[in-house]
Image 1 (cartoon, rainbow, N blue to C red):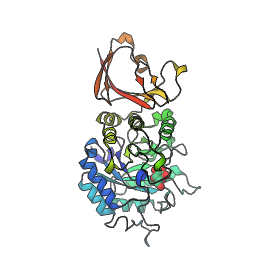
Image 2: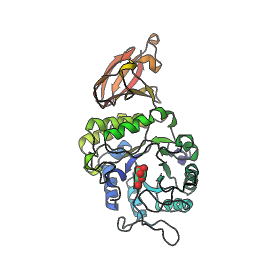
Image 3: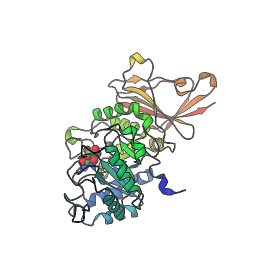
Image 4: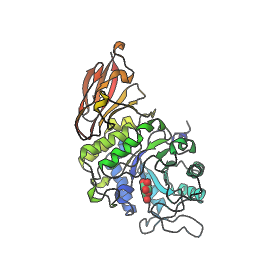
Length: 388
Ligand code: GLA
C-alpha cells in the first residue's frame, strides 16, 4: 500500500516543547528529549514525534523571504537536528501559524505557505503544528488551512498536518475536508484540574467528529508537570495536579482518541509519570486502528449524578469494548453500568469479562451490570470481552 496515504491513521504520539519550556528552547534540549525517548521506553511505547513549538525562528525572514532559525538556540541548524532525531528512528515536528505572526510574535506563514512547506521539506520536517494567531480578519481560517494542507501535500515529503485553531469557527464542520490530520478543538490547556475538566466537558458532545486521518486534539498532556512550566498561564508554581488527576487526564485523552503529545520535562519524569504515560493498555485503546470516537453513557440514577460523572465506551477493532468510568466530581461515587446500555441484553446469555487497565488485573465475569465505586477526580478503565 502507498505508505504516505497512512499519515494520521492513528492519533499522533510524541512530545511538544511548549507546555514546559515555551520560549526557552534550544537544540540540546531537543536532542536530550530524543535520547530519553529511546532510553526510557517512550519510543517503544509508540511515542514518535518530537515537536518544537513557537519561538524557534528569528523575528524577520531573510531577503528571499525564507524563515530563519534562531542561531543562538539552534547553532547546528534545523537540518542537523532533524537528522539527529531521524537517526534514532523518531520523527521531527515544527510550528508555524496561519497568520502574519505566530502567537509569540515570530513570522507566520500567511502568503508564504508554499515557500514554507518547501523549506520544511528540505529541513526534513515530518509534522507541522499550524496555529491561528494574527489571522487577517478578512481571510477565512478554513481557506488558510486548505492552503497549507495543499502546500504540505505537494512539498515532496510526508508531513503530518496538525491544525491548531482552538475549536473556533465551527472547525468540526470543515477540518476533515481541509486535509488536516488532527485539529485542536480547545483553548490552551493549563496544568490544573479545572482546565482538564473543562476541556473534557467541552468535547463530550463532539465525540462523533474524531476518527482516523483527522483526530480531535484536546491539547498537549500536562501529565507530570506538577506546576513546572516557565509560563504563568500554563502552570507556573501555582499550577499542578495530583497523581490521580494526571491519571484521569491521560485516561480521558486515551478514551476520547486525542493525540498524545507529552508536555512535561521527560528528563526529570518521576516513576508515577512514566507509569501513566507508558501504560500499554491505555495506549492500545487510544491507538486502536478503527479510530472510533467514544460514546457517553450517563449512569443511573440520573437525578443523583451531575454531568461530571459518566462512562465512555469505545468500540475496539477486535470486538472488545474499552469502558472508562469517570468521576470528575469532588466526592466518591458509585457508577453503575447496565449492560443493556452497551447493546448487550441479559437474554443473550453473554457476560462481560473485565480487565482493569490501570491495575493490570482481571476483575472477573459480570452479567447484566457492573457498578464500581470511583473516588473523587479518579477513574477506572476496563477492557471488556464478551464471553459465554
Ligand atoms: C497557541 C497554541 C499553543 C502554543 C502557543 C505558542 O496559544 O494554542 O498550543 O502553540 O500558541 O505561542
